[in-house]
Image 1 (cartoon, rainbow, N blue to C red):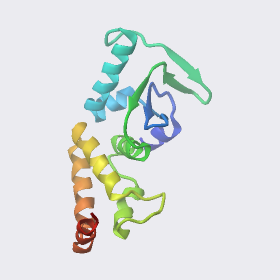
Image 2: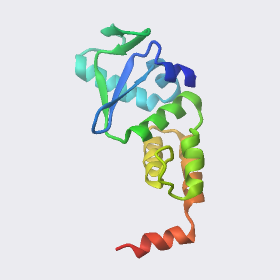
Image 3: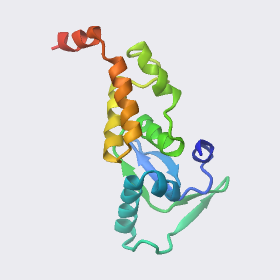
Image 4: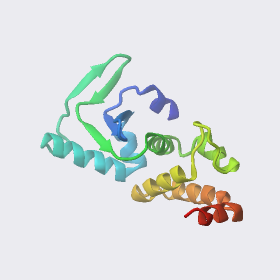
Length: 158
């Protein structure tokens, strides 16, 4: 399913994420089955935008490469890397290696790794969208990152 997300084939949902409105494309059927809470957000936004009811035919425009995107976008106010991780989890049931290994280095500055703050943001989304397995994975990452040295560094800054 990760390839389906990666290729963006026949998507019917577009998310505009973050301050710059980074676009992420998804499939409403996958969202409905894997994350009903996020599917409800999309459905509510689509109804509000179009003034229609569930089940009505939606307008689509065809893009190059067999990618269909919804005419309206759902705005999400979260860091794009965090939302991308959420979508990856919804599609695959796993987290990427960015989050899997980043916390082992305790705050690596690599652009490829997740910060502890990003893991907290991801856990917040997981709670909001009722994804207990992702919540547990985030909790595990946070616990593994909390050391006495890290706690001391947090409290030593005014």
